[in-house]
Image (cartoon, rainbow, N blue to C red; front, side, top):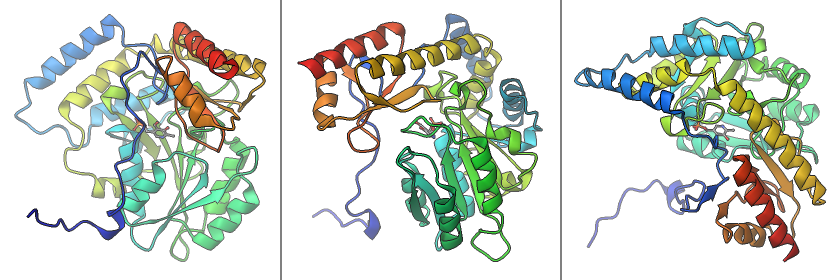
Length: 370
Ligand SMILES: Cc1ncc(COP(=O)(O)O)c(C=O)c1O
């Protein structure tokens, strides 16, 4: 007789969550960068990892100071905002960053507020740290209504407010004026009298924003309850590396340092990430290509008579279909995996290479027209 495990009652019916990983020729389902690392970058990573391997008997720098300094340089170049390395924090993917923030500031009897539809992992992290997750509604065009947000903040008194911008799965960016208003609202709406809610702007897709769309990093100087989270998984083309980071006030980072696991970032990860950061120059052109291809994909989908949301990310949400599952399945039968996610009737496709995008459009036309 097997023993009965002391399963947490709230997990009794839960399954591990994640996008389907299927072995198909074209994967346009998890918003990766379609271009593999260059041979020069691969050689650099090999060299850096080889050096790090010589000291693997020792624990890594648990503060990852060199890496944080490199990330600060990158952010200064990318967004024009120069921060000291102490205001940057790195972890294994921005998933871990957001999870660490929840562990540090949420927890039992505390609430995390977000606006649906948004990134599907947020409720899972809240659940893991016993926090309450509250999803306020967006408007019909998936924007945030400030009156709804104000009321939700006053009623829920959230420890954290999570705003993905550009948002996943809609691809839409939060206008800066709205973010400023939300930051003002969040002053004083924290869980305890006199505390503020922390506003986390998840900019996983930040580098793909259209010209003229500012980064929330520009507001860090003014708001010490603001966190901007970023990742090397998307624009950097390093999803397999698992490196996410955030920019925030030192007080926020100090709280996260209390809950992080000791030596959470391996010496191998730190070395590989630094090598990738040093090779960032070709990235600019690659990101520009992906942005152009995204705009072209939106036009091509609209030309098919479909509804397509304006995207500042490396994917587009399109629809609407009476039976989106049948469409998803039909495209899969052409060897192309996209994502069945988001509001009813919509599907999401990541921007691939020219060939992948063309194959997807051809498959879609065939499935729609039979
Ligand atoms: C909005 C958003 N935030 C965070 C992540 C997590 O990315 P990673 O953990 O790879 O940095 C994703 C991944 O798809 C995302 O869409």
